[in-house]
Every structure is written in C-alpha cells, then in structure tokens.
Amino acid sequence: MDATADFNKTPLYNLHLSLLAKMVPFAGYMMPVQYPTGIIKEHLHTRIAAGLFDISHMGQVILEGGLDIYQAAEAVMPGDFQSLKPGQIRYSFLLNEQGGVIDDLMVTRPAAENEQNTAFVIVNASGRAVDLAHIRKHLPQVKATLLEDRALIALQGPKAAQVLSRFCDAPSKLRFMHAGKFSIANIGLCWISRSGYTGEDGFEISVPNESVEAFCKKLLEQPEVLPIGLGARDSLRLEAGLPLHGHDLNPDISPIEANLSWAIGKRRREQGGFIGAETVQRQLSEGVKRRLVALRPECRALAREATMIADGEGRFIGCVTSGGFSPSLNAPICMGYVETAFAKPGTAVSLIVRGKPLPAKIVDLPFIPHRYVKG
Image: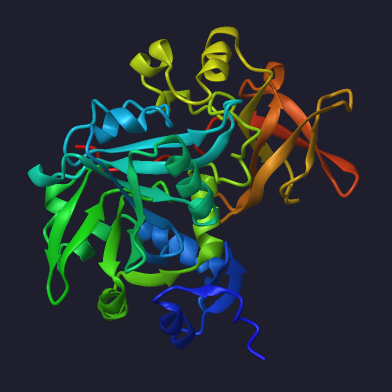
C-alpha cells in the first residue's frame, strides 16, 4: 500500500525522489525536508550562494472583477492596496472579526497595463481552502481563481541574481518586493518576484507545471545552486525573524501582538473599514498585553515550540512559538510571546526545558541581518 497516496504531490515530486530527498507530509503534501547534504549544509549554502526551494504547495490566486479590485480587497485585508504601484508587492493578512490572523499573504499589482484590475496573491499551503472561502464569502463580486496549472519555486541567496540572470533579465529589472512577467527560454513568460522567506536576496518564480522540472534541473546544473528542503527553509526564516503561520501567527493572534503593525498603512489605521479593524485600532491606541519577541538561550539546549517562558520569580509569562538551532550563529534561538512588560530587549527570562529553568535573554529581531536588494 502506498503510504503517500493520501497526500498531494507537487510537480517536482519525482525530481525530489531522484535527488534522494527525505520526503515528509506537510500541509497536505509530500515535501522534501532535506537532501543527503543535510539541513545545516543546505542552510549555510543558502547564506553564501544560492538555494533552490520547491514551494509549489503554496497557493497562487488571481483576484479579478468588474470593479476596483484593490479597493475591494481592502474590505478583507488591512493593507493599503490602493496605493500599490504597477509591479509592487505588499505583505498583508486576512483577519477574523476579532483581529486574529487567518493567514498572512503577499498581494501583487501586475506591471502590465492590461492587468491593472487584477491582483496576484500568494497564500500559505495550509490556508488555501480557508482563504478562498473567506474571500468569496466577503467579496462575492470578486472572482478568486486558484492557479492549479502552475508550480512555484524560490531561488534564494546572495548569488541568486547572478544565477537567474543566465536565464532572464529579471534581476536587472526588479528590486525587493517588486514583480513582473519575464521570458525564460523554452518556457515563455513566467511570473517572477524579488521576494522570499530567508532574509536573503532572492526570487520566487511561477512556472507552468509541465516546464518546472526541466527548468529546475537547469538551475541545479549551476555550480552555485543546491536543492534545499523544508528543514533549512524553517531555520533560515527563523534566523531572519519571519513569522510562520500556524506557529507565530494564528487566528488568536493579532498583527499588533506579532509586531506587524508596519504592514498596516497610516490611512488604513485611521480609516479602518476592514474585518477586525475595531480590535486592531484599539490595540494600536491602547497597546497589547503580549508581544512576539526573539530569545537567545544562554546554554546549548534547544527550546522548541510550546516551551514555557518564566520571569525571575518562576511565574509563567509566555510561550515559545518557534525554536531551533541556528547554523549561522551556531547556537539555539527561538521566538515566542511574552507579557508586554517583559518584551524589552535585554530582559532576562527563563525557558522551562524538560522541567528545568534555563537562562535566556530577550534580543532584537532579526537574529541575522536581512540582505534584501532595495536599490
């Protein structure tokens, strides 16, 4: 009996097997967690060269309709989309009535003149069905289409632009958080954004299902590129201080508690008009009782998700939401929520690991400086 039969497979599944990837269930898909090189080498290689990620489990959605699509989108998301310029990307959220994060996502205004009333949205794998249902319920006049004929890959790292420039001119045309359609030989026009989830420079590339394996093989032939699995993807994003939905974000956590108020523009903060606005506006004016923080354990023990955080008196003040080993720092790191009074960098706390209080300090995010190309 095929143990993988109950899980979806991306168009790159057979390529992962040929590369001897260790496959695991993730968000309803069989995905590579690591390759024979191992998580630490994959992680460090991405920091110094270029890593290739299969992110086809993510949802690619087109929003369109016979109205101002960006004005409509502001009813269900707090982003300032009406100010988006052609080719620009904005990070935002779907919120519930209590201001909790249903999902975080990327919204792009296409660069093409004839696509100005469409939006290209990337949603998390586990939230695809929920997100589409939420949008269709609250924006019945908008057509939301999941693109199931396209794969999505990410090329990340300081040499990603050098590699991709051998196939198209996107690196010379795009800066961070911008996107467009670019021609790739033997494939045609592909949607490419200068964005990613590692804190490094990089690109996310939407490729037709039938072309993606051949293109990935060409990328992997480049001496700078290694395939990277979910294990290193998680440690890279944790070092970069990027929250993971289902862990650092969920429907019980607001963007303000998660230190993501920067993603809500001034006009939206003042005017509201989006689902969850009442809670968000109240928290912006009155403050919150807890905040997402970065923590550095002062020992070698790892503090995983659900590890309790205590103050100097042993009182529980919060909980770790993401934790693991940082290959770049050669040390454990974690993120979690603590009472706001303890959120200041430099504050000493304890992490309760296997029943023992271990010393840690609140530190600034990110753990590793971002190296996005913004110029």
